[in-house]
Image (cartoon, rainbow, N blue to C red; front, side):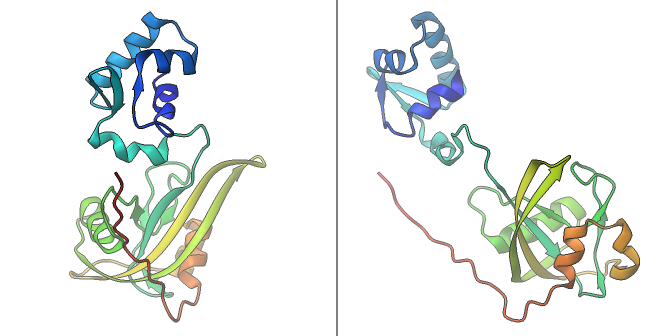
Length: 201
């Protein structure tokens, strides 16, 4: 129910109780419960007769959808096509496989900030972001059914301390196939992703 309520604010800045009730076609006592819950969680606020998203909840707008969206992920390459830093994954869908270190971009981060944070938080390794090597779309299937989609941003970084690297060819059978392909690809020029600041009312 909360998701249905929030979806209304994709198209409306503010709504009265009876407007929400009419749009969703639910009983008033049930709606009242869920609206109060969203207010308590800091997602909605009530100003006079109107409900609206709080300023801190505005970032939810791009994610309010019934459709599944692609997850952007940074992969960090420390090394070259012969030797790189690899780790054993602890999470699905590739649990137990060797892979490039990586993670999500947090709200407000740029690519370089995310790269350096991921390596320090997850692996206690200080690095210096160098460049974006490539961007790729990975679709993962299980029994011919699409189960995951990742937007992979491969970046290169330079370690600030001595770390252990692994031979790419010797590790190939234990590696995630897509990571191996990304490591071996040729990227002569690099890619720039610009940071754009916009204002909305």
